[in-house]
Image 1: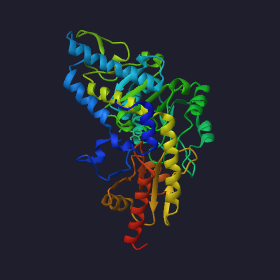
Image 2: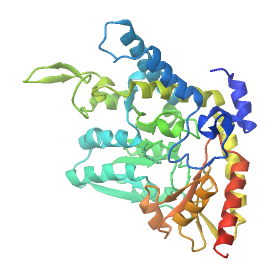
Image 3: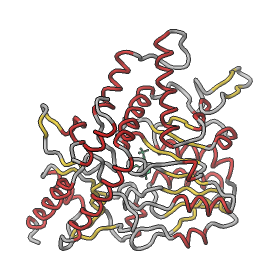
Length: 416
Ligand code: PLP
């Protein structure tokens, strides 16, 4: 990377980070795109894109099996990526990091292995009302096949978790807690350290869905003491199709495999197969090697910008954006918890969120409209959908002004 850490941090503060992301340029000129959909997927800096190209150009081969140099090089990069993720999450051991396709696959893996071994008929799995479907459906499927029940912790009117209710619902039948670190639909930051402490007091393990947290907050799994932490590369400026699952070594070692196939075995006969130790046991088949290379570059980039600066920037955008949006007549922000990342879900007069999104798209402002894969959140707030602007490190106060200007134009268009 050509910048020093310091210069990247300064570039964030100057609003110049955008230039590192080729999507914002057309023929080397700024194309005016206002991208406010990073919660769905973040754009990629140049260094991530070139890391993937370089890898295919100069070091590509399948991993773990080859005796030739290219394969050794590819293996080094892949395993180097595992160490990179370990450092990013401050996990104790590199074996505690399993590569997966993303958050959804990680939670499905946990439901099918750890979950299946923990829950039986009448047991309870505790989640919250603000989960993404990916942290609801796998547990629901597990409940269907085991006779366990899903118990849902309510949220308050401002979109915060009701911690008292969490404590009350954490009962003798609770075998597992799975909770979002940050809500994708509301932006709420959950008090996950406190949640882990309360659950551990009752001997209950905790899964944290970190999909929306890792781009905004530093994560230390040893400090959180969570049992599992999962995230997707594409939301933290990395490629699609790659993510990571952190699990405490003792849990992973005791878990049965998820999928069968190559790389996850120790020996195979037609009578019996023995499985490889972790993490290989959970990585059946040829993995997304180039994805790991790209994820490594993304984590390098984010760490070079620095979480202190990222959080400061995010808080400034959150505060500024909230103030601007609250001044718009007829606009209601859904999700106003005290601790949030810069995500603005809103409804506007009686204009359907899809119409809002389409109108904004015409102004080159990319937002999301819909239920954001969190239908229970929509039901909780009595809306069929919201328009959501979710911001990343390349966004600025000017982007928020462009959003507001487009909304005001839209209101005029509707005669408001
Ligand atoms: N969990 C949360 C909180 C999310 O926001 C998302 C994606 O939006 C997911 C899980 C699923 O992530 P992926 O689609 O990368 O598997």
